[in-house]
Length: 477
Ligand code: NAD
Image (cartoon, rainbow, N blue to C red; front, side):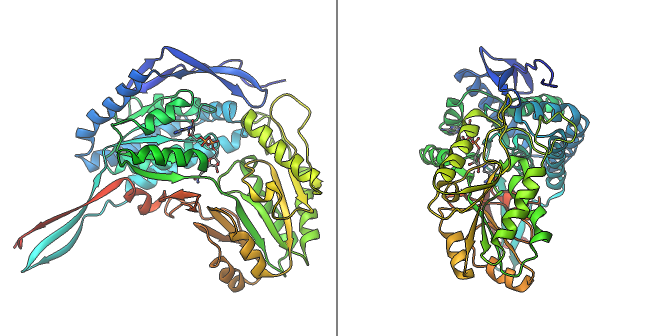
């Protein structure tokens, strides 16, 4: 029986600092039950225009006062912290993740806000002598359109909101229609904290993202989502040369070197693949394990998989919740079934869990190889293929034989050897003896190849929300 509140309707958006009702709504499904539990606002075309107009108007003053912006980011962090339990409850209800993970996600969002509130926005004097004066400034772009996915609706929103606003931009942000409610609720929390129009939070069914990408007002689109959608966003942005940051999909390899202590690494590798039920862009999605330890590693991972408590996110002790939505549930089911029908063995799991909602057994697959879909494609769910290899060079080649290049990990007992292998992998981040350790506010996060364009986080993420300007003059004395 569901422990969640029966209904939770958040049928208003935030435009120009005001609560705005929309002509239409759409249903939001609780993935733990598979049933609708709320409605969300579906904004009209003219309301989208209103949101961009509000952001344009607000930007004229917001861009002028850096200290005010820093103070506003700090206030926003305090307000979100104060609302964290309520926001986390909504997040668990719409996304499925356990309450502790939901609270951690809200905590990450305010951590990012506070990091950016203090980050320097440099003005560099590059010449100041008897021949002249030259200064390089970083100016805001204007209005930013932000589009986010359903796996970390709040944390990934904040990767955009915090640097964009610090740099002097204003924003219209749209969450995924699978998880609109927490972002809308955060918009409501910030209505009285940020000046009107600085952050406009809207929602709608899927044509809305395309309408934002082709809208004439925003000067940048900051998008996180799948590679397929990212390509459409890039094409739309090309029409009027909007700036772009694209954080896209991955098929992140974990290479386990010969001589690795399997028992020591198995828990960390497992959670590097199965955190958030595998629905993390940077989760380990395929393991290349040296043949000398492959069988032991499969068994160690399978043992953990069998012990994991999968349940509704509201249940105390739940470690993994349901998969977020039906299309994704079907996709994971299909990829596992495809592997099994092609000779793979499920060392753990392999099936849907027989209960309402989108629950799937944490699954470890062996007897798999490149060429099987779950090895070649992004599964984005709780199923991990473990491929055996015999030569490290071959493992590196196979790790790199993908159009994705988001993150990777190398595991070994010889740190120098692992470090040397890490440098040969084509991806934006490589962690040694952990997977995904490189996601911190001060480190650039972004993908190579089809995994993205540009980066988020750190000063590099901030610069992505700016345009350089040189001001030059005769000597200033
Ligand atoms: P998705 O591409 O289906 O949707 C992402 C967002 O784009 C949603 O808000 C959606 O409504 C919107 N959208 C849909 N069609 C659009 C269009 N034509 N134009 C503009 N926007 C449109 O992705 P998803 O299923 O929500 O998220 C899962 C994917 O996101 C995975 O591939 C995952 O790897 C990726 N992801 C990447 C990162 C990263 O930082 N690299 C982080 C999280 C998720």
